[in-house]
Image (tube, rainbow, N blue to C red; front, side):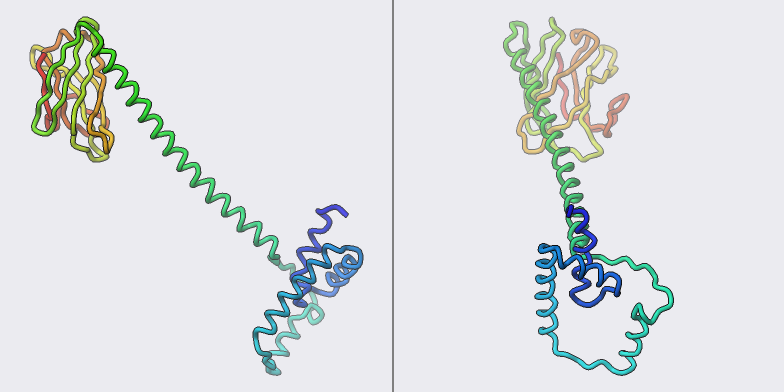
Length: 245
């Protein structure tokens, strides 16, 4: 007999072991048990469980009123039986396993997203470090000191190739609603945004490439301010430092 044909009988074995099946189901199951060794073994295991439970509780003689109410609920005492949904042990176990798998998948997805974010941050740090090393190897690089109330560091500047990299030590950490914004200072005092960045926690140094569609040599210097997340059209927050070219 195929395994699928066993399922209706296996699911009825727990109820059969405690006498909870109606006459038709009892007859069908007992007929099946005569030819199925695996179902007989299953029934024997449920008999052991049910007998252990019965022995663990002292017998109590039901009252006459309770006996009458129970008898009135038997299938033989009812004119029309109502279909009932019964949960077997196997169904309960399968449902529990599905819930566990769902929870594990959610946790695995969250962990994967976290790992991907960490990998993206690491790749960005590597690229910034490579840009700084490339500038240091240039004959035209200028190393301008950065000095502020909170920070110190160096600005690597190559005006000929329109490249610049900030290397800043101990930048204060920001809230989720804040970000650092780089400004290029024009001759008339105007400010042009040159990028946004946020330092990673636990790192002593922050490296940030400065990008500009205009020649950096056209500007007089740069500054960094604290702005709302997403940046601003012009400086609105506290200035952290300024470097003149």
